[in-house]
Structures are given as structure tokens and as C-alpha cells.
Image (cartoon, rainbow, N blue to C red; front, top):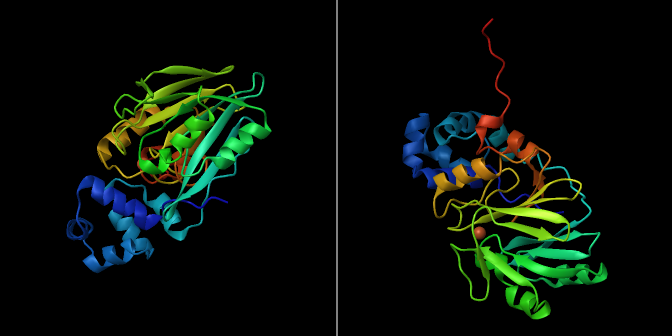
Length: 280
Ligand SMILES: [Fe+2]
């Protein structure tokens, strides 16, 4: 079972960095001692502290508390035509995905992770022809085994964002459309974590699928290393606008869905059930 990537302390730390808010500033805004913020950032989940800081970081306090209690993970997804691979990169795990069209036997790999062996084995055992390799972004952990993939599938085209060019790859932009046999896909620019992060939205399996790289995680998102505000904005524009039953395949952590992220992702408070109004 793939572990959840981020919990309370990671989420708060990403929001603080993204908004440029220091421990001292957050303590002042929330009117609590700095030590309380420090304790939270080291993993201590105290409800009153979580509730007092969440609004100042534009985070949803109820889902943030659940993250602090580590009491949620998305429902397991089993979808014919989609398989997740998880490989170790230094001290973390990274995902790659294989998507295929059963009727034609054509397949595409999405990222490579640090070791593509299991992905290649799966394709071989299912007698699939990998005709394309789509990259969500070019951070090393996601493309570490690209050379081996190219060596094994010399005829496959490699696709990457024109904002993150790679030698030999076909450069694509937001709105790029593609086919995997009878499956149809569109690439959307979800930048902010990386300069040219792409989300690949695919239709034709039993549920729509979005391979999002580090734009979004189950209950969290990749750090806004280029621009936190752009990461939030492009996720809202291109990911949260997808159908609720869309299967979300992140670069780290378990597979999730739009519906579950609307309910459980603290970075997007606007989708949460509002407190019942006391107005008559
Ligand atoms: Fe990344």
C-alpha cells in the first residue's frame, strides 16, 4: 500500500513557504505563542492550534485536522487499463503509470520513476506496445529511468512541456491532444510546482483519468517551488474542473479522485461542506 505523502506539518509548512509567512508572523496572526507553531511543524496535532492558524493560511481546518490525525486515505482504485508503479528515489517513493487501450494493445507510459522495470514487465506480460512516453515534469525523480525506457522502446515518442525542453523529446503546450489507441487525452499546463508541469487527462477507460505529476497529492499538493499561487490557480482551473469521478494519479502517494480531493484536500477550502447557516 502506498503511503500518504503529506500530513498536517507538511501541508502547513508548504502553505507558510508559499505565502511567505514566518513562524513569528503566523503566531502573531493567530494570536498564539510561537512554540505552538513549532510543535505543529514537528507533527503535534492540537485542535485549537490547527483551527486558529488554518484561516490565516487559507486552509480548511476540518480536513487539516483529519490530516493531523492521519485518519484518512482515499479509497483504493482498480481500473482496467491503468496501473501504478512505485519506485524508490533516495529517501522517498515516486510513481509512474501505464495506461493502455485493451482493444488495440497500444499503451503509454507516464513518467519513469527511478526504475521502470516493473512497468516494462507489465507491458510485456500484457503484450502491449508502448508507443509514447509522457512526462509530467522534468524533476529528476520522475525521469530518472528515461534513458532505459528509450533504449527499450526506441520507436516511442517522448513528450514534455515546451517550458521544460529535453533533448529528443517532442515539446507540447497546454491543450495538446493525443490518442492511446482508442483512448483520447488532453495535456493541461498545471505549473507552479515546476515551471512547465503538465496534467494528462484521459478519456475512454471506465472512469476518466488525470495523471497530475506533483501538481496535486492525495490530501495535499506538491510544493509551490516556482509559484505557490500559480500552483493553486492552475490546479483550480485545470484539475478541480474535471468530473468528480476522475481518477487522480499523483507523482507521489496514493491514487485519489476529484470527489475525494474536493472533500479532503485542505488547500481547497471552497469545496468543503459549509457549516449550516443559522439564518432562518
Ligand atoms: Fe516534482
